[in-house]
Figure 1 (cartoon, rainbow, N blue to C red):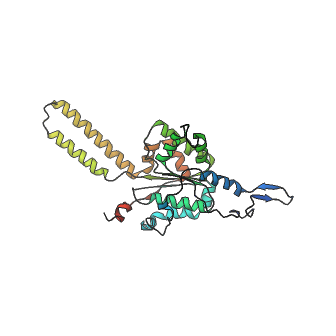
Figure 2 (cartoon, one colour):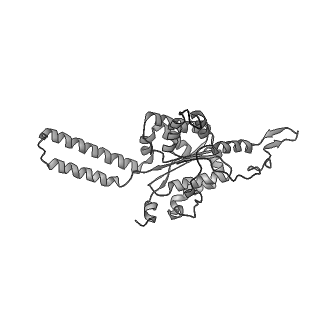
Figure 3 (cartoon, rainbow, N blue to C red):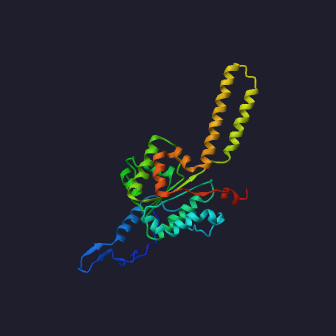
Length: 294
């Protein structure tokens, strides 16, 4: 899901109440200077060239509509506070990190914030991280609509960059470097990031239990092709792997910072924390499945 900036319905007058929509400010001596709103409009226009726009599913998102209204109000306090102070937060480069279970409305909340930013005349680019990386790779293609440098400039210059599903991408050295470079430059320039990330799937507990069950069956089986020593070594390896899997699952579930460090690297998370502060935690059942009646 790659999206462009929102903000199509910008007030034709000056959003700052300074230049009455002319884009210029004239002082007492008759000298004219560009109004700050003109620079903001340039960023909004640049943001419009990034991606495809907010999907139809999310265009009417609000705190009063599903799935957000189905969430525990106490879970939404951090997001509500961020939206109330949105202009101030963006001016200071303050972002937001939303972490939690799959299907709990994290993307809807991110779209709500993006929409609110567009409504006050700010430029916004919204991407799922896997799609963002795909577009960055594609920008090296000679037939690409935008070069890597042009796309990167757009991503670093918008007022708010939304990174949905951070940590879902396949980890490679190139991926880690691209994410670090992008987050680091926005951190240096004082520009906000809104990130969403998923906690580990709790159903992997079932996988872990099944793995342990298979280990026990293997331990009691008679396998003619393996010596007792070879079989014992195999079982030991499986037990060690299961133990490591269980450890990672527990760590990731209780500590989203540690989980994200494992996914995108310590340098990137360090700067993201400084931009966004501690994550807003959204836990609960998968609302898509619940609303489908399963």
